Amino acid sequence: MLLFIDESGHDHHEMPCEVLAGVAVSESNLWNLVKAVRAAEKGYFGDYLRNLRVTELKAKKLLKRKRFRSAGRHVEIADSELPELAHSALTKGISAAENGAGTSAITERELVAYSRQVLKFVDEVINIAACYEVRVIASVVDIKSPRPDSGMLRKDYVYLFERYFYLLGGQPPHERGLVVFDELEKTKAKVLIQQMAAYFLGTQNGRYRSARIVPEPFFVHSELTTGVFLADLAAYTLGWGWRRTPMPQPARAELAPYATKLQDMQFVGEKPKIDGSGNWDLYGITYLDDLRSQSDRANQED
Image (cartoon, rainbow, N blue to C red; front, side):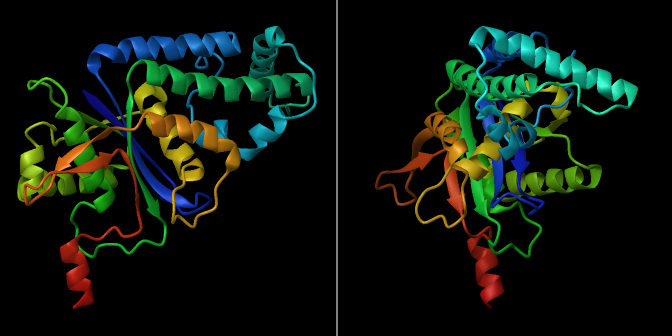
């Protein structure tokens, strides 16, 4: 099984939350999932997006507020016309970029059609992921959360790997979990690798969970990897659209339907209680308002 991981909101520019999101997919389903997403691209836009110079799919561009306003304009367009008009908008954009011109040649109908197709495409991608039994795991974090002083792995990562471990527990005994990150700046990647090693080799829980999770991650280019695109989509959508009491952060109502579908895809399982008296319910998506471990909190309070 592979867990594709991406983050959103960590620059604190726009997002009301930090989100570390992972989408878990079995290797037996991965290629069929990729082919289905590619087929959706061709169906909604008339060609593969890479051929139309859309080299990197990012949720913050696909699902920006302007996209919803454009799609909601009172312009009557038959569903059968939408793919051709959306394709025309993209090809005109390519021509304008090559000639150094503006995008004024793109008509209102083409812009509206493209926006509507984008939103339909995103919805279809989530539906496809659900059909191929993709499971969502995410830590949604208050941006004001206290941070640990130590160089240990942050709680949002620990929670993510904890849930991945219990998800793998429902798989055949020989199944192992690989971790795939969107490419990071080299220095950050080294730090993350060191922190993961310290967790999986230097803590009791980490050593136990390394029996199912391979502790050394892979880093890939997001524009080449459908799994990372799904993780990016989950991170952005949950950061704006998933809320539970008592989360105080503002939300975007237009993203709630997408977030609800992702919530329905979350891992749900059980975790044994330390005293052996039963199990805790475990949900793939969790909210954190403190990123410190118990030892970090104790040290900072002292």
